[in-house]
Image 1 (tube, one colour):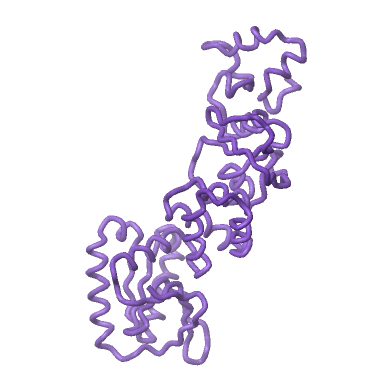
Image 2 (cartoon, rainbow, N blue to C red):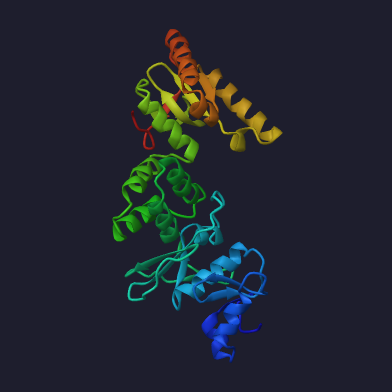
Length: 311
């Protein structure tokens, strides 16, 4: 039907076109040709709605000026490391009397953002969408994955995220604020954040995190995850996705570790799954590495401060 948006339409629109409301809902009964998605919103088929159909339905349900935010908006705005989530989060003006229903989370706000059109849908700006989603999450590792990606991809500055946190609702911001401090310090992924939290919780020696190492002549050597400067030990948390997914990544990782060892550093490498599933084993590996490093001469490297922190 031409009046629908890709097959999604409000019941009131059908009624305005002359269709009886009872007839509309009768067609949405089990076995009928249409399907009810949300109160007053239907799709003109009876199959499983697609993600896009759910998003269109959520905007129609929210009414004029509604915008997608959270995961849905983040996906349309270019983020990739997002979970599959059937929930659709929308923002509506504070005066609008609309409540969450079905798969739609409705947030009324006095700070309606200017909508950006992406893929034909109204979306909140990325900084707002990211933090609206972060406020709803409770797992710090999940939050770090969400906040680190746009910073790492240079889609957002940490300062923009900080400004939006200050301007927005305080509810649910404690965890995002803690994670943002880690992102500011240089954490580039959820795996790094998890490793950093694990190191501190285990009471391991004072260390620097996300440290830029230089050769004595000032040439860049590497950006390492954890560096125990006192003995010259590097701990790398090597994810399969970033270090071992292709032959080129395997060779690059091996070459990088050779370069670190060539300047006198002791390198201990772990996978994120090892940190989660065998923490005692990883700690034993680190203890052995620390013991070996303590017996060796000091490495020939320079440490660049700025994105480093001590445990």
